[in-house]
Length: 216
Image (cartoon, rainbow, N blue to C red):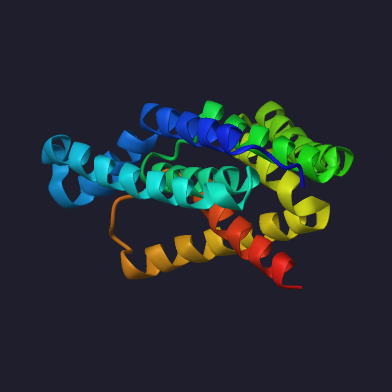
């Protein structure tokens, strides 16, 4: 692991703190509050966003002493939470924030001297699914997976390797299908939601696979 001076760690932490409120945080807070408060969530989400930002800021600052990779890990986990919320609510994964996770993945790979393996793990699953997506678009005019999902798959697979990425994709597909069937069983006459929030399941199963990989 590449070491870093305290000045570099502090600069990185401050940069992450500056970027967080400009990203999906306010939208994610608004998405969580909307089911409970409806349109009045516009009056409530700033306070919730501020509280969440404070917690994330504390987590980042508390981990800076562990090395410069620790704030990046905290940032990635925070972004995954926000992206999962946004995907469940709006079926939307902002490409720029998926790309930011990819940058963090490459930074970790460079620090660990494994940039080649990380690039292969990033490109292989994403390229395979992109080809399947293109075939379905051409033959049936159906977008079976969103562009944001592809970016997220590439970014996450680079951190857990090809095998871990394949396991993450499989588990996400199973959990996504299970959640859809459970929703239909509980609310057969409920509102029809557009597709499955596959990105949210990718985020959850990435954490699961990453934890299992670290424990082995």
